[in-house]
Amino acid sequence: MTPTLILLVFTAYTLLLFAITFITARRANHQSFYIGNKASPWYVVAYGMIGASLSGVTFMSVPGWVGETQFSYMMVAFGYFFGYVVIALVLLPLYYRLQLTSIYGYLEQRFGFWSYKTGAGFFILSRVLGASLRMFLVINVLQIFVFDAWNVPFWVNVLIFIALVIIYTLKGGIRTIIWTDTLQTTFMLLAVVLSVVFISRELGEPVQKLLKNLFESDTSRMVITDWDHPRHFIKQFFSGMFITITMTGLDQEMMQKNLSIRHLKDAQKNMFTFSTINLVVVFMFLVLGAFLLFFARARNINVAMSDDLFPTIAFRYLSPAAGIVFLIGLISAAFPSADGALTSLTTSFSIDFLGLEKKPEMDYAKKTRIRYTVHLSFALIFFICILVFRQMNDRAIIDKLFTIAGYTYGPLLGLYTFGLFTKRRVTDRFTPWIAIISPIICYFLHLYSEELFNGYRFGFEMILVNGFLTFMGLLIFSRKGSKGVPEA
Image (cartoon, rainbow, N blue to C red; front, side):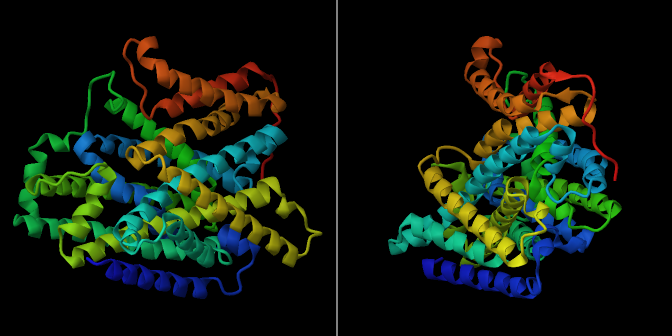
């Protein structure tokens, strides 16, 4: 598959996105950008969230990871399911009752100013790092297989990608993203199914036989019972559950899409539907990973990084049609990560730090200029972060992503847990310090866990430790009586 063909496919797909943007962004206003005018159909949101939640990380890292971790990631996915149930039954009713645009407004009403800013700040930090990693994964593939052939510098590639995302999110915001996510989910799932078929044909074995070989091999092992192993099945399950609660339920990007639905009941339908489909989709990605592993072994293919396995096989060992399918799937998985992150970060900073919603005296044109400035500023931050990650590409991106989540979403988990399950009042001015110290303690626990805990190694469950430390810090500096949450 030639670099020119790859670029043509990328361009055609981008033009299709722009066409949807043109239709959905007409007559858009601030409420369209932030919450889609509360008019998003729940089933459209549910379907589109599949692509938004899985992203380019899942599309490449999860299949590439199968050789190292077998199907143990499926235990994380089961944890995801129960995490989504908690979101639907506990968090969504709270957000709808308080009629929030930014979900971190809850922290201000429950605890106070500094807790509110701490929660929003940790979201911004986590989403900037996580979204930058997701974008880096896709941009790096385009660099290796397209732009390196033309001697185009990496930074130019990054600039082009981010510029495209800016163009189709700047005006329409969440109203546009709801519909572009639907398109992108469709192409991503088609890419998985068709890639399985292409690999099966190339190996000369029917899919049914390859599946039989898979389930008779160690590759399909889901349950790891060694307690000291970082992927012990109990650790995986509870890590997945709390990663979902934090990275979806306490994340402005994911909740912004849910809050664009008019009624709570419909938003809950969205969450239950999405969580069920997500289990099936994750399993499909693991099966794809196993098929890629079989193909690599049959052709003696070795790659330096597990994330490179899928693109290497798709572009260099399968037919051009398979390469096109992979590329469309990758782009479809990548754009939702970038557009949703950029929109949610703009929303959070504009509302949580600049307070644009609380300034009725400011005219619409000025608010729009400020929002555009914030949008472009976060795009610039993405640009810088991706260039930094280029120098740090030393292990699977999904591993890095969950590691970052453990450190940055842990304080959010502690804050919301304390607010929802205690009636105590925190010493608000101490909250930022507690939220900073907790991840630092976790970092040193991670470094010295084997010496301190008789060989025990922390995995993704570090997010639970971080949340617990934040909770205990808030408890120590709290007193009886609650600031309370007003009823709607």
